[in-house]
Image (tube, rainbow over all chains, first blue to last red; front, side, top):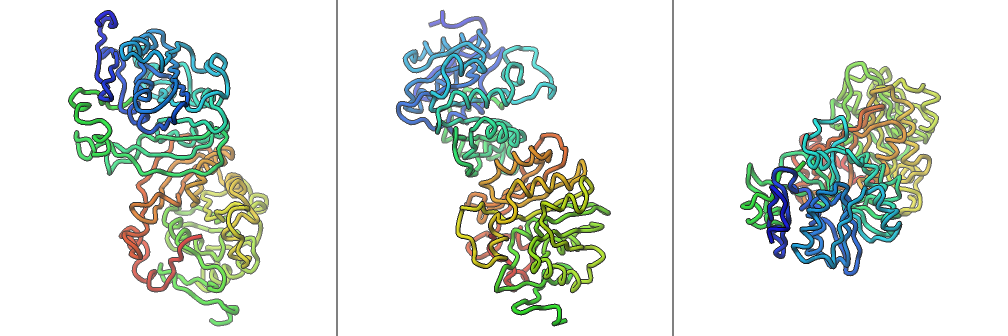
Length: 257
Length: 257
């Protein structure tokens, strides 16, 4: 098994149907955002999914276990990270379900085909260039900052990949919601459901989960909010019902980007 | 005093600094939406306000009492309704502060001047033509349905009236939030704060209050939600602190459009 791992890498338990993931704790480990998004996404039997900016593959892995997706394509621009994701796919024996492709997501519609996919998911970098310090670690930097793709690039790629009626699931910062809605409408994706994510019951929502539909009619619903903590350092029941206690013990819940 | 009133009209107490309003209970009376918006709006000393689609003038009247606005222009397309608003202004002796103008709000920027106003407020008709039955009463119909102006028309007028840095306060249906954001951005008004209004603690937000800034930077906050009822037929503390018990007794709180 150890030939699967490169220096500094370790195997973490995803606490979901025995799934494992290879991560490099010296570099970027997935955060709670990815797990929240995986739980928000709905995939029907036989549907094909594209995970834009899949990183180490956490969302693709979770969706392969939680949903009846027929096939999941994970798109990742950084070769070294795509390579880790691919080794995690092999480690779990999921080569028949998940294909990791190392490419710029902006090229995905041309290479994978336009208007063919039922579901697109993305947990993209949240920060615009010029806001906050770029992390010296390139993997962390790409996960946090819009170095290779910006918000419109992600939404545009999703719009081109989706078939009419296909769904795009996105997690992003609440503060960028107006831009998100406008880019979605520009690229013919209609926001249909949003779910705000608050750190605590008293805090304003920092994150938002969005379900949108390619070519959908304008009609949006606000779903009940999700609260991460019920008090300082104690996860809410909503979160614990998703994670179980193992997650906390194993330190899988990083604090987000 | 009675020469102020036309058939079927009555004088209602606005439960705010002794303000009165003339309404026709056989036709349209203002709803809680107008009061929520009035409480959401901030006006600084000396600022000039335009109330787009002012109806019987409830928002203009409340803002004249609650804020240090220098001048408020109430724009109303229906002559008979503008006339009622004007009589309410006289009834309260507020002619020096509030001017009611009977015109199409789309003409307001040309007639009042572009880029001159600090604050624009609007509680516009919510329903698109083709959704729901048009009320046979023309006043009710105009208050509910986009007969004379649609969402983009309202936002476009606000954008033209506002000076750079001026604020636009809008109340609307949550389900139209994506369109609202896109029209705002199209007309150079940046959504800055939103506050959802729920009927009860368990219900999804039906309405949303939006504060936006002409030429502002993209950066939006979600404020804590407002809940109308704490249980069936019992207003929440949030609402009672605004209205007091008189409002309920006097039946001023209609159930919205």
